Length: 375
Image (cartoon, rainbow, N blue to C red):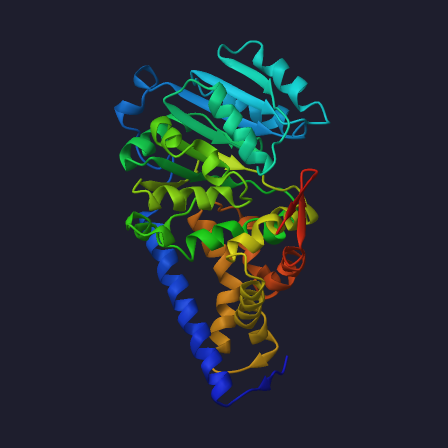
């Protein structure tokens, strides 16, 4: 393919900016490959063994999760926590009944029914607040219904919590994608974490470097209650990241880990589901600024796709990066099957695949699990 050669100050500046951005991501990914904690990679300290555990509450907010409960809930029930509580958030698909059947033979496991959503609360945040009120643990572990808890996951998580000394530890589960539709954009969540935020920076006393993912969030109960629980973020769709930032702003410590061999997730089971899932929080991710959204999309298009359409200074390097970056991120995240590594081939078109996410995020309202939120 013959590409038109572009020259001049604008194209030189674009190439320089793109190469600088690429260098930053390469350094960040390398640092994270060496320093980011991974559950299951290290030997667990004796203090994390079951007989010496603190009292742990595993808490699951669930709304219309009947397709996930039989697949993922049994693994959570086998972790040996003092209590496992699922909150059925007015599901219409039998989620609560399925979960109750699984809980019958497990001591300390139960399902509670959610109360109506009050004004000023986002659905998941209200569900989590009710779960915390119903729980009795010293350690509160909030986890989504689509998270896969493998053998030893809770012990590994508690060991990492103790090692970090954090008030909030968030775990990024390893993506367990199965179809092409899922692969198109869902695993890019790892790219945003591992190639943009160096783990050592999370230890700095800066709210800017605090982050979390709502799929697995582990709190010291005392710290959680000191800030009013999920009331701290009651109306936020991006509650996970903002919870971490607001805790850190109050002098508390946050940390993170990768799920590795212990904790996985199947976030979305199709490309349309991925679009809707990303879109609900994409505007808050960009500071609730539609201008930021447009700038971000334009910049990513220039860095990943434009080098394949025209030639400009640095374009050959950018083309190579676009074909390898996602594969390298997958490797660091612990996703090393050939199909995982081959996701790198989507690099040149990944921003085009993300275009529907940006379009939905620009709208005044977004919908998620039957509820509508004003942006």
